[in-house]
Amino acid sequence: MSTALPDAARAEAFRAQMRSGAKTRAYFLARLPLAWFAGLRVKRLDAQRCEVLVPRGWRTQNPFRSTYFAAQAMAAELATGALGMAAVQGAGAPVSMLVTEMRSTFGKKAVSDATFTCEDGDRVAAAVAETLRTGEGTTVEATAVGRMADGTEVATFVFTWSFKRKS
Image (cartoon, rainbow, N blue to C red; front, top):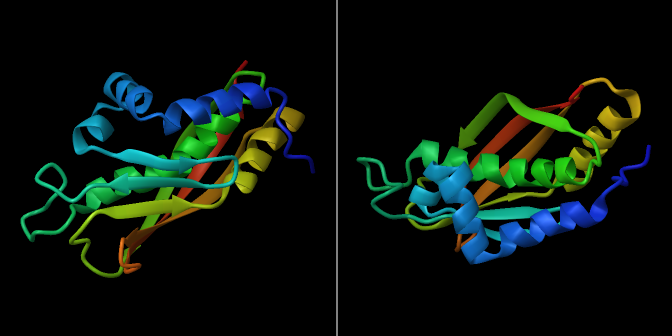
């Protein structure tokens, strides 16, 4: 099955926008205000991989002096979702996307900035391509693993994304 999307240039333009600090902050303010408030940053976004940093600070901390799980979930969702948004931008036809399930496990407390990484871009693009090919909805699981700068794994999130062609 081919994962080539009809409008690869549009997908790359979206990825470039998300990699641009000022444009990303403006996008977050307009479309994802909680991500803007929390200070999430897209460190890397290409066709296969997305890295999102959630800073440790007063906006994201819980009463136990670590990063609140919901802030971690937001960064993990963005790490998986940005890959989906880029694929949808490159679809060449209207495609909707929605989280239908989320699972998580937590290892250590996140006591410093954490970066959530998803490397499932090919699988996500394949799901969008399948939706375009068949006209039927598809689902795909995408995993984001969060690590502090020292490599300590703080959490793993698995999101199930649903893609459907709009009529």
